[in-house]
Image (cartoon, rainbow, N blue to C red; front, side):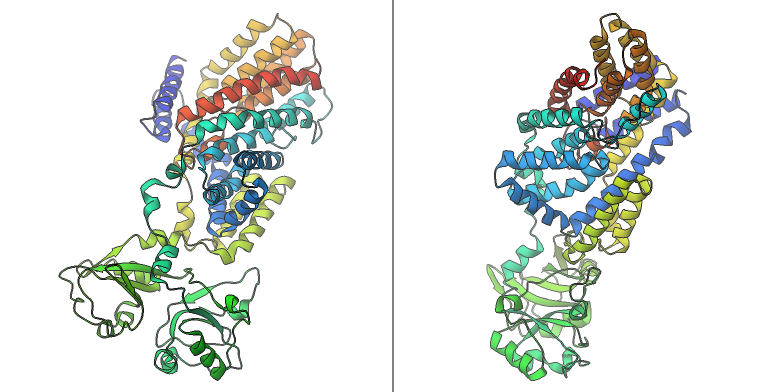
Length: 614
């Protein structure tokens, strides 16, 4: 018992100190308990196979797909519109929406779905995500108190109530107390959340936020100027010809910046696929393809007219910005001893040698995008190249001639696959439906959704899907879960529970209820809320029988005490999910979650007997 208590105190001190990562502290505690013989190896590793942990992995992938396809940005814009530009109103919209969803979807699932949406919303509004993310996690837990299926402890206490001879609880038996909980918690979070505002600079990623985006590079080189979208119908004589045979530069003064394969055939189908090709002289134009041309409008009109092509009637609709699904951009800086210096771009023939096109040259403060073939490369020139992301990545292998500026691989991962947003929306809706109706086990619903997101192309690569998983949060929760075995095995949990209840047992039923609530709340700091509810529910029933009162209010005290735990990042999976995204420390949870947990606890101790008398 002594080793278990000391290890718990060490872990708590490590979390508060904050100099060592939380997941490392949790792993140290796990190793100590295992080496000392308190936990078996199987028990120590059980957290890593726990369905909740596996579900969290899947939810990170689903959330990443929602963000990666731009769906999060669209939904975030809706929330912004509801918020009406008022920060407090926007905060209330986020918290209440999360709470209502949390009543029907697991709190972990609710946070994973809302997290990318709220991050996008915060970025669009110029706010710090840290102001919203911890309240988001807390709101999901409070919302879970609205219905019977909102959170596992509700089901645990409902089963204990039936075993004690009570009538089965309905879906909305929790609703009266749940509404009070959500309303009071929301009002408390409005002032408390101001402690969390870490500023936009911190939220946006510090130094990394100064890196130019692809859109900024396009704007600097003015690449979207005179950019036109042309469709190739099946009746056009251009079908089957190569770009080299068309000689658009020589005959029409036009440059082909992108060849979109088959987009005209796909239209607006849900499962349409966009395939981009970096144009070469050998590229063949087929019916249904789309050409993105740069040049004067009159030249484009002549080309369209002579080859029976089509453009949108609206001139603004005909214009299209460059997009970067399969092809991208990068800048390369020639080294002083490079063999490309004093050579013209025509002689260098980047397309033939490196599978990339040179779209522009930055020379001093000027950007050159016309008549590049005869341009001679000078020292300190910067070349803007276009090609497939794979070809651009290979440019970095040539360290003797140039340096690739920025990190193209990271830029490729950040490209929004907006044409896949409908797919992501359908998969997300199907997952939520499965969770609400309990069609399949929750962990399987999430795993299937994550797998479908990957197979449907909501990520550029499988590696991008893995990058969305926050492994620190996963390891933290998985390493802390076996703590319940140690507490139960050494008798610490039973001693604390029985001792606290015995102290207040003779003071009346309300004091017994308060003792049950406080005991449950303290226990849930160290073990999962479901395990805490399972441990305390029979004790609560026994206390009620001894006091000669109904067990129902005591059981409600257990489920509220187990679920409304906000004082640490590892108390519940939602708390851990938002820790890194919000850049929170352990003390952030203490400063905001501590007062919320204490005040809500007092309110619920007073309110529960009103709706469920002794």
